[in-house]
Amino acid sequence: MLTEKDITARTQSLQQLLQDKLGVRGRDLEHALRKAGRLLPRRVRRQAAQLARAEKMAGNPRLARQIDGGALARAQSDVTAHLSAIDLADRRKGRLIALGAVVAANLLIVCTAFVVWLWWRGYV
Image (cartoon, rainbow, N blue to C red; front, side, top):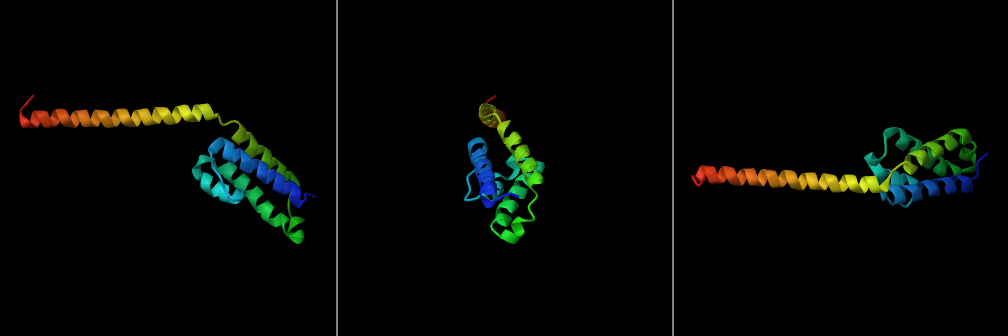
């Protein structure tokens, strides 16, 4: 049977991974998962929510008996594997490329509008 300390240690390690990999902070795992939102796939969010529910249940001795240790271990390993596979440098590069694409598209639109305006006024 898992103790409250074991479950708390598991959820805190996942919360730390969420903070390191996604930059999501929260007072507990459930709050951090809500902030993470769509940054995590649905399957991973469900498994992490299972861990958050287990953390709440562990506070009550009668409910703590209902916690399935095997399912909790699988959920933690799956969530940890997903978060560990996130490459921070690649995410950073992707954000910079997306920002550059937005700037280039806006610049193209403004230049096109300026040329159309010049044509409309008869300068071109």
